Length: 419
Ligand SMILES: Cc1cc2nc3c(=O)[nH]c(=O)nc-3n(C[C@H](O)[C@H](O)[C@H](O)COP(=O)(O)O)c2cc1C
Ligand code: SF4
Image (cartoon, rainbow, N blue to C red):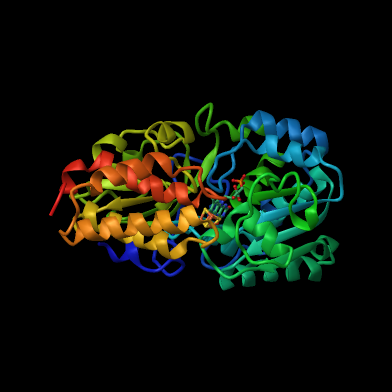
């Protein structure tokens, strides 16, 4: 297996990738030229329009709706629907920028926070004004992102901008489930960063039991851009249903892994050719949408457009925009066994069905990988793939089930029926 794929979460090369670029066909919005290794400072950000007045209040909600912006944190939920739901709740309200990024194959939120913290803060403050929030919080776990956001707030304060005083930073230990929205609220409320049962959802009752807008940091950065450039300009890139640009993290068997700002609607093949430096010839498949989206065979996905709906139709999803190319060393058996072991390790351990389900999937793949499979192992994996989704308090277990289902469906020949 490629080293970049299977090292520990938060330490692997894609997640820490300092390298970022924008697709040559677009005028970059987030990855601006000059965003080198250090955060873009306040003067440079102001020159780009960050913190400048733009659409506000109800007018901005309409603009957000026209833009068609969908959340970049994984679920691709329409941003305007969520913002309106929170705004409709009884105040005081809370907004949180989710920069936890527990997905091992993703590095885009870390890149954004360490290079354009002001743009994220601009989006967070815009959200706070729009929904009339009493608290605005940045939720983080990686030390370099904490430093970058603190630095940006200090810079604002030193410039006499009192908006800095209204932003709080909440630091949480990095785990996969810590970024789930109910875990986030629980952690900010002083509890463990573990998901809670729904309902209520955070937009109804979250931080301080108040209506809470939890938004991915990239979503907020796009919102800030839309407030000034407008919905029409946002829609100049992307597709009708998945408009705009997105930050993707390309990793694995390609020549130029990194974080890229790309127009939505390019095929997977185009992305790897045009910004990822080309795929290794032996690439046989992909993990799309991070480790959460299961395995997809090369031929099924290569000419699929990267938009939220086309990838969902394949039983996967663009999720947080992480795509890992599986190379010669990444045999389906090995990948499935390693990812299943990761799921069993990362379960929050709260729901019996999740603890037992991830353990059973791990043990079964491990047996198959060792050539010691039982005759009914394949059937069991297919069954778990069908029956486990939506059984846990959060959708973590759905990811493990997707792994089981997709491995069996995409690579049937790679999993011998019995030893
Ligand atoms: C297990 C799990 C982990 C998640 N981790 C993150 C994360 O690290 N960052 C993030 O923005 N969203 C994460 N999400 C999604 C959040 O629950 C939430 O939907 C998202 O922050 C909303 O932002 P958006 O509407 O801007 O996409 C996770 C969801 C699940 C089920
Ligand atoms: S489904 Fe799994 S990860 Fe989610 S809350 Fe339950 S035990 Fe935790």
